[in-house]
Length: 229
Image 1: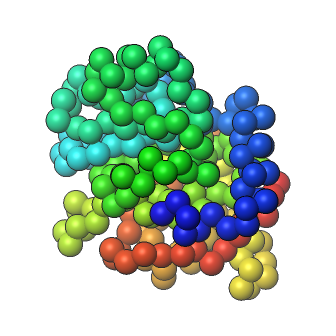
Image 2 (image 1 turned 135 degrees about the vertical axis):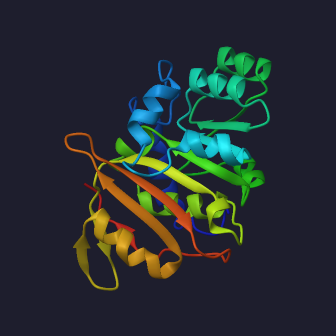
């Protein structure tokens, strides 16, 4: 997963430098985020919330831009869930807390994933991201959606296939084939043909929620690039 879709090495270094320089990138741990805050931010009206799904299917949960309090609460409520978090920086205090509660932490940028993320490929039953995707302005979001695809589990019973719940502001996307700029909600419609099932729900003044799952187990490459805002 790590090597297949990262692209130009110079661009990767620029993106990594930008990520490190952005104090509010969203890939840092979110100390005060609770399960209730995740529920409020990531639940699509009239759809199953991520935590209803966790209670039902267990499996592996990955929090992108993790919150230690949220993961600890989740582990206490569901001891058999494999709780994982990825953040651009993991401090020793967080690492100690995570070990005490049997939570796995991965240090590194989800937009330039470390090798250790590979062990989760095709294993994530639920992926949540309450903040990271909403604050990205100078990184290409589309490779990240590719990584979401690679990490999500697949089951012939579609109700059991992994789902990602992502909070996002409507980014500027450029379709290189059609040579036009499109909205993220329009991109959701187009990507259905690639195997993504994407439900986009707009929330007034607060961006939107995207629920992402896949309709087939095959590898996928997204033929789009993002226009930097």
